[in-house]
Image (cartoon, rainbow, N blue to C red; front, side, top):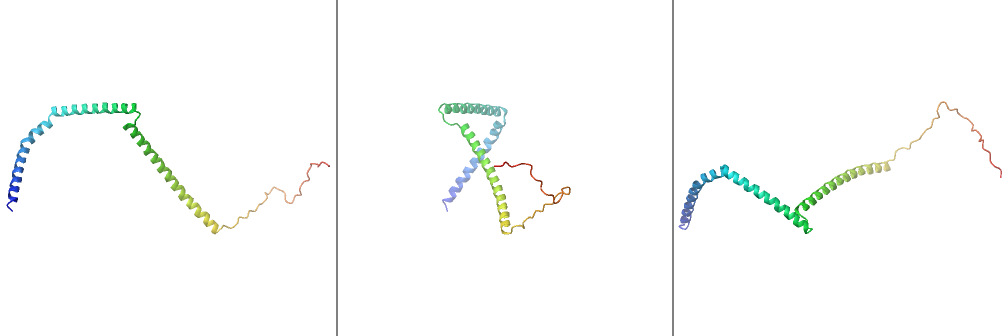
Length: 147
């Protein structure tokens, strides 16, 4: 039990030192971070970093192009094409699913007709009223050649 007391005392001392350090440095750091000069210098640093990053990216793309190797832009374009193809394939699969459902419905209807065929349709032809009834056919005016 006596070994825990020195550890607890050490931790308490360390915590007090940390609290004093925090109080001492918090106010000056907040003032520095909130000043316009700090914000301006950080903005200039960020702009410089972004400019250098763009130059490095362009230089790397030119270097890879000279070696005939794909760049990050090439991979991004390829990934976009793959996504577009996947979208088109999914649309075609959806169409096939719809057609398959319609075909299943049609097959079920045809199967139902095969089991219970409809009654035959009898067509009755009624001649028009202005046409004469029981008229004898007219003889043909063409003559046959004698052999």
